[in-house]
Image (cartoon, rainbow, N blue to C red; front, side, top):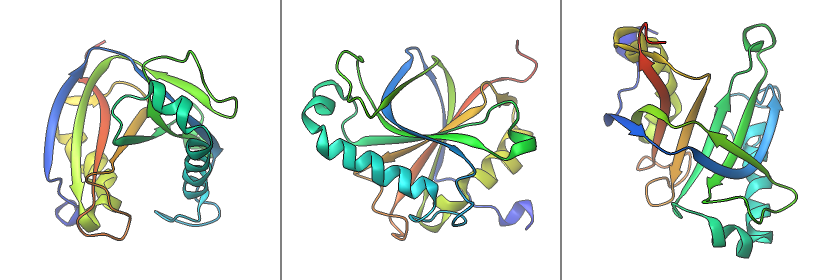
Length: 182
């Protein structure tokens, strides 16, 4: 595949987030594609979302009490230092909350730093291939580099209608800093 064949985002924004992102949800560590490749509801990421959604139903009253951005759920991929050797990483599925005062016992909290993000919106069949464009074309040719070893996929229920829906949209949040910035 050439760079010209890569999916193109509907839009790209650079946004500074001045507050830390507080989330509650569920986490998986390992190779999520060992059972099923790619975007598949039967791989470990799909199973993680299923577990998370079941817990959201079970603890709806508590979660909705503290949840912010009520239409958005997040999938965060976090690469540990040994990722290149092991190909294992963390995947977190969750929602944003304003505090951790009450949290279901089966869920974990995650706090992401205040930082600048490059936000890429992909639509339709291109949602599967957004990462290719970001890491193979945009980042190498931009004035930015990754600020932290994670990225976020944001699923807004008003714009995401399932993996197979051509009208579905997804936002990728990449924490960035200027190249050569400390």
